[in-house]
Length: 372
Image (cartoon, rainbow, N blue to C red; front, side):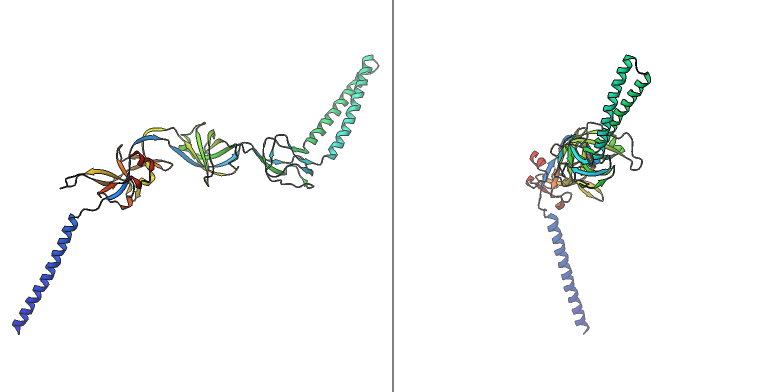
C-alpha cells in the first residue's frame, strides 16, 4: 500500500515537473523570438530644419471706427417740417438733411431787414445834413448807432435761421432717421449718425512690454472674426501714457477702406508686424508635441544597430525650447540644429528609437516637404 502511494507521488512529481519545464521552455523561446524580431519601419514625413527670415508679430483685439463719424443732433428746438434723407444714403458735405419750422424766424428777419432799411436811410440823411452844417453831431452818432443795431439784429436772426436747417458736416453714409416729420424736437436731440466709411481707424491696446516694440508707421493687418475681411494699415497714434487701471497702452491704426468692408464698432483681430530677423529656426506647430515633461520633436537620424550590416533610419525624441509664434509656426530656440530632419506627420505612432522610412506624401507641411 505504501509502495503504491510512493509510486503515485513520484509519478505526479514527474508530470508536474514536465509541465513546468515545458512552460518555462516555451516562455524562454517566445522571449528569444520577440527579442530577435525586428519591428517594422513606420512611414513618416519629415521637414528639414533650416534658418529662415522670421517676421515676428504682436496680436491684439481691436475695434473699428470711422475717421470721421458723429451723431448728428438738432441745434434748435422746433417742429420737424421736412426730412431729406433715407437710411444708408450717401450724403455730401453741406447737403440739407432736416428742415425745422422757421416761419417765425423768417417773419422776424423780414421785420429786421425793414428796420435796417429805415436805419440806413436815416443815416444817409443825417450825413447829408451834417455835411451842410444843419445837423448836430449827436444826431449823426445816433443814426450810426441805430444802423449798426439794426444790422446786428438781422445777423442774429439769420444765425438763428441757420440752426433750423441741418446740413451734413462731411461726406459719408447716414444712418436710420431717429425723428419723424411733424414731431417736436428739443435742442440736442440726435436725429441720425453719419459715418465716413471710406477712411477707417482701428483702436487696440498692448501691454507695456509690447508697446515698447511698436512705433508709428509700422504695418498692421486686420481680420474679422468671420475672416471675411482682410485689410492692411499703418499705426498713426500711440497714447503717451499707460492706463493706470488696465496697465495697457492704447494704439491707433489708420486703414484705407474704399470698398466699405469695415463697419464702425466691428470686432477685429489685429497683427502688428515687427522688423524681420534673419537666421531663425521655425517649425510648423504640428511638428511640436507638448507633454508634462516639456515640448519635444522626433528627429530622424541614421544609425547602425549592433550586429547590423547596413545603417537604418531611426527616430529620437528631442526636447526643445519654444520661443515666439507667428501664424502657424513656432520659433525653436534650443534643441535643434540646421539640417536636422524632424517628423511632421505620424508622431502619434512613434517611440524613441523606432525604425522609420521617409514618405513625404504624408506631409502636413507642404512647403517643407517640397524642399526635401
